[in-house]
Image 1 (cartoon, rainbow over the protein chains, first blue to last red):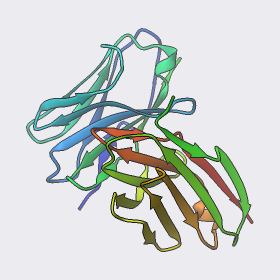
Image 2 (image 1 turned 45 degrees about the vertical axis):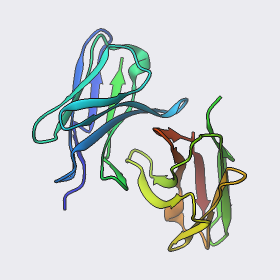
Image 3 (image 1 turned 90 degrees about the horizontal axis):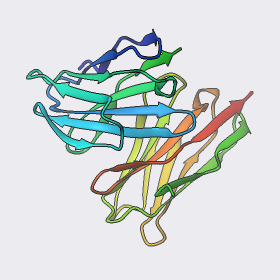
Image 4 (image 1 turned 120 degrees about the horizontal axis):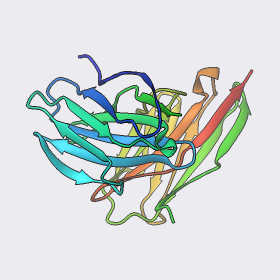
Length: 110
Length: 109
């Protein structure tokens, strides 16, 4: 089975722009979660989607949003980018027992 | 205060040596505890997962222990290899998942 895939792997944006990241879960997995990882804060939970519905949400501003499609693929959008949004964004799909992470998208905001 | 505390923050050891990483948590109620290995620039990969009733779980040279009474877990790495250089993240699941900040391990030849 193919693992979790994320596109793009690397991205450079300027302040004020918006960005959309994509995640394809492992086939058959219906739950997709997004995380932000920075050297100072570690891994922080953004949100989780299950069957196209947002099930949980972390403590992030409304500039961070997401959605999930009927094929379980998910997108995450960040609007009005700030320098502090520079991070590794990880997507994970899960079963009831285990969570599998993708390789991440490295976003740099200049 | 983070509900999952890991120590040390970073560790340097020589190839072939053993090491132990610590994870203390205050998350409650407790569902399970996982250890992940994360290579630089990659996503975390699961090493072990333990439920409340499990005291120890091994995965090759990695052995995790759990004391649910004291809310402590450790990850022991035996006969370290250069490829063990990575960050090791402790994750405790309750109603949601709580992440430790990780321990950065460097194995030197």
